[in-house]
Image (cartoon, rainbow, N blue to C red; front, side, top):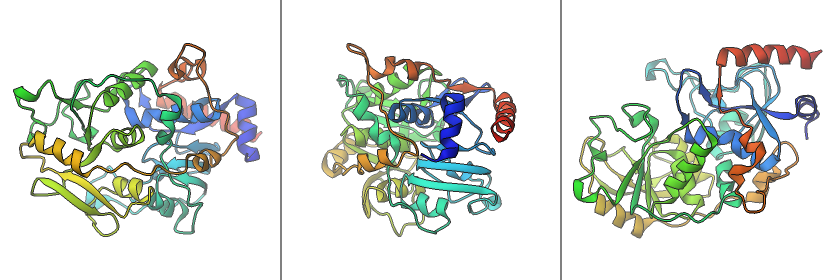
Length: 355
């Protein structure tokens, strides 16, 4: 374990972690992002406290496409994704390519895939250890979940008209319309999740209750693949509907997150279901395509990913008769923060640690 991180843990009793968490202005969690502190606690056996991504406090980063948001001091990346833009939410003409910022010391232990590794190391190599930490979730939660729907369709936040718990697609996105005769068979799923640990467990169960998954959400794909649920990426980048064979090394229109995830699994090509957002979807055709074209992935070396954690692993285990979601360490996680206070506390903590 790096001494500087060890020192913080011994002083605070918990791991400093930066993640894309909920703020007081939000009434929801984003499912994938909120799993970051969960997975770090599950593997380490320790409590976690949130640190701003821009800080001088030594800290970890784990789940999510968040690497580009970190600057200052020492950061240990574990299974993290990264955008190729420093400011990806800005209009395209205003975006700037991401490079590791000056004054930052990035310790890249593992990344979601080789694209993120190249970005976070500045192209100077890396460990070659890939995998989203959420791949490890079935090790901790293998409860049986009854199937309720023939197909689950998971939307990305950007496709939603609101942040309600039920999925309400943007009005122009006709591809998410479900005919009345299929409403009992097809479930639209949003990554918008209640601000509670039970909300994360229930969202996981909602995904697992589907016989098949088609998803625009990266972590919808990760959960489906890791639990062996047949699935295809629901690509919007086409004018024609149907199965497409994506070249993960040559198509510049592809979602970089998907390229990174599947290249980290050793895939050079990927079957997906292409469906224009403005056109109605042939849902039976989607289900037939998943049944025909999904191939189970060879998951990354879980032991290597666990060993890449920048502190000793001491995985949590449920109490007899309970589940991992009942564990006191997970129950103690804070999932929503006052960002202004978070920054003030971080400055005070940095001063104390530097004393």
